Amino acid sequence: MDFNQAISAHFLWKFKLAAYLAKPDRSLYAETLAAEDLCALDQWIEGEGKKHVDSPEFTKLVEDHARFHAAVREIINKVDAGEKVNNEAALGANSAYAAASNGIVLSLMKLKQAA
Image (cartoon, rainbow, N blue to C red; front, side):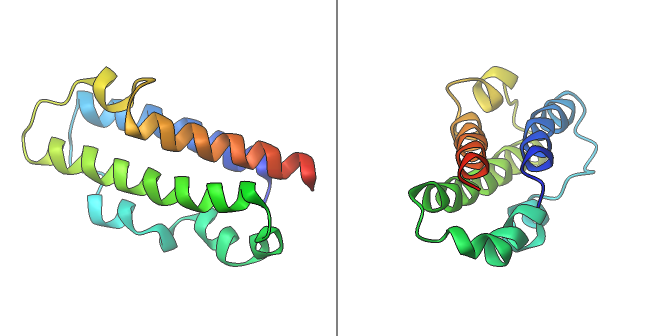
């Protein structure tokens, strides 16, 4: 896995979700997005990434990755249920999404440095 590509991919999710909040076209499926094992990062975590299993950064990455998927699922479910979801509340600096996403990026950066 290319650490830089993984970091970029997580930054792009914010734009995808913001677009979905603005125009919920049902192109994103909560249950599919919630399935951690379907994403490239999880495949790396369960495969090649296992060599970092003793690293605290790896443990934090796994935890934040699960929280990221849960936050995305919650956002999509709310939008699809017709709830008004404020962009800042859902994706802003103080959101569960941002905390998990930022944690993933920080862990990936630390793992990249160690590699």
